[in-house]
Image (cartoon, rainbow, N blue to C red; front, side, top):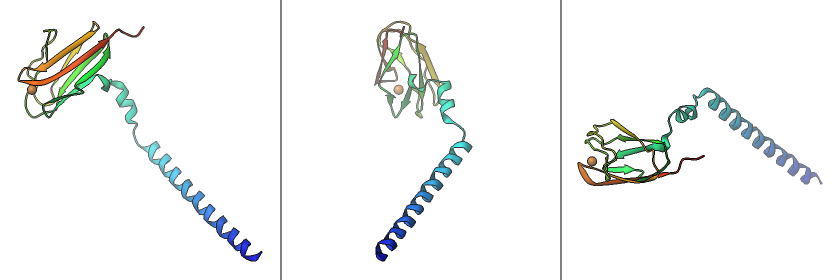
Length: 133
Ligand SMILES: [Cu+2]
């Protein structure tokens, strides 16, 4: 009986230590979350879903689906200039230097292939769905 009680006390002590540990971790997480600025608000100001990054001689994402009326922005993150040119001559950017942007608003549903006229093997596609009612 005595050894069971000792065992029980030890279990209680371990349990208390675990609870304390969890409480410390939780309060630290709460404190750091409260002090840090919220990146969520900044992300909501612009819609990052409609951005195509040009990097390492590639359009990323290569295929982007948007609702009609949405604007797509391309940003050149490469050290060399690139262009964004519609296969069907619907849009055409100037040569974009590093960090320069080009935007186009897609009013009509359809599939819009495009490429870089300086490196024609760089291709991408914008798929425009009907606007949500
Ligand atoms: Cu290019």
